[in-house]
Amino acid sequence: MTENIYELGQGTRQSFPYGVDFVPDDQKNPIIFWEGSGHSSGYGRFSAQQALEPQWKNHLEIAGVMWFVPFIERLARQENVELTEVLEAYKQVHGQAVRVVSIP
Image (cartoon, rainbow, N blue to C red; front, side, top):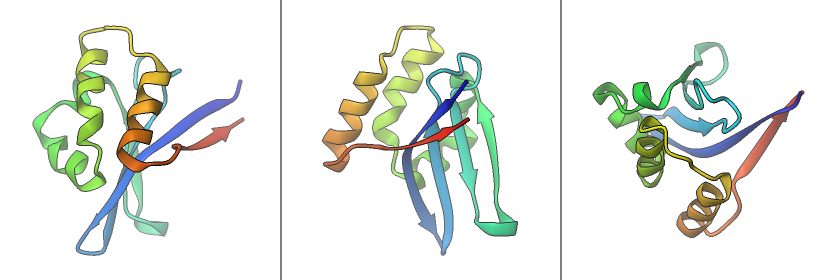
């Protein structure tokens, strides 16, 4: 099964990259937080509830995905979030389609 990862945002603080991706088919841990590059990079997959914990707020801000927080809140309440809603919101914010990485 192919997994689609939607790259919602990335930014830098003091030349250090931060990013947030979304995996809508992963019901348990649909949010990916990543940071760094090359050998100094790391990532984790998190539930919507975990992604809303206070320690992630700066990460969300740096990556420029505060527009996505209402969707995370809905996921945390186990409400239905259609991928088309997220993609439309991304396009409104960025003026282009989101980049998708497919992993076999």
